[in-house]
Image (cartoon, rainbow, N blue to C red; front, side, top):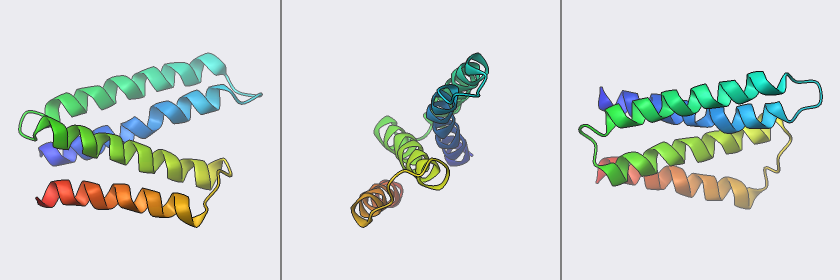
Length: 105
């Protein structure tokens, strides 16, 4: 159950930079997106707190930030036309390999 909580925390970790990005769009409701970001930070932190009850802090933090980093990268590539060159994608793959390694070992 704690690993599920950690994955949920990582998914909400993607939400706050997305909200901040959307708050900067010309036709957006800036404050709604900022509040969305704050809500995502709060939920993400709460699930991380819960997950750390049985997952070592270093592992939990690395997995949490890794999901957030790779997820945010993919959101940027698919929705904001961020660069998807091979070096960026291979770098993201290394993050995923590191996360899997932390889970397995």
